[in-house]
Amino acid sequence: MEVNFNGKTLYHIQNMNICSDGSAFDDFVWADHYPTEADLLLIWEKEFGQDETSGLDEFLTSSEIYKVYAEEL
Image 1 (tube, rainbow, N blue to C red):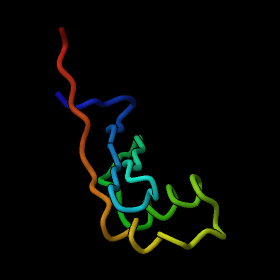
Image 2 (image 1 turned 30 degrees about the vertical axis):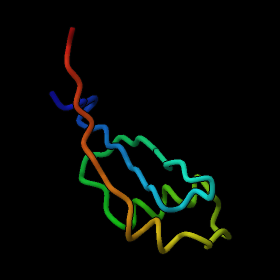
Image 3 (image 1 turned 90 degrees about the vertical axis):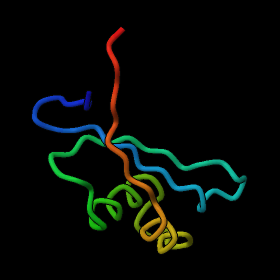
């Protein structure tokens, strides 16, 4: 089942290309719509600041966006 709360869905943003150590960049966001490029830009700015542009284009073009699903045990 989708993970929803207060009318918003939990999304997983993942990018395998921007971390210099080969690890994945992962973030989880609540949104009432599928995240757009403008939303990704806000995520970038919150994580790295407005002045950091190294890797921004890669983040905007190669990030994967997934709805989060969970199973009740």
